[in-house]
Image 1: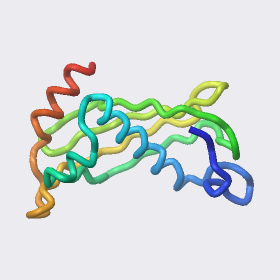
Image 2 (image 1 turned 60 degrees about the horizontal axis):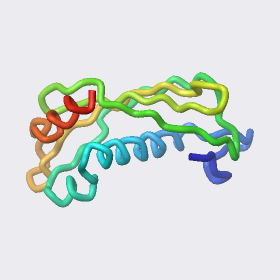
Image 3 (image 1 turned 30 degrees about the vertical axis):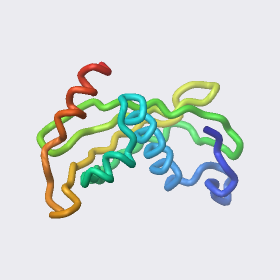
Length: 126
């Protein structure tokens, strides 16, 4: 990815809000890599809502900096799962973060256990 001008603040560095969108890109691509698109998950009546986010900004990402989003699922418990992230530019790690998600049945707006297909896919991906 590359830091776009619209994602920067008055100091020319990435605004802290942009990071959550980049983490989402990582999660969506992670799901695609394990064989499920988020569109399929959503169409099946399941949402994976963010319930917690923690971010450590180690170094600023400036406008036009190219970086990668590395993402993995690190924990599954009942109805929740956690993703860990590292954002890296040419000089190394810039950001470390975690997001915790709850699986929600959209029709009832109630938490449900993490689906078995996701548990199995994550075990195979380790």
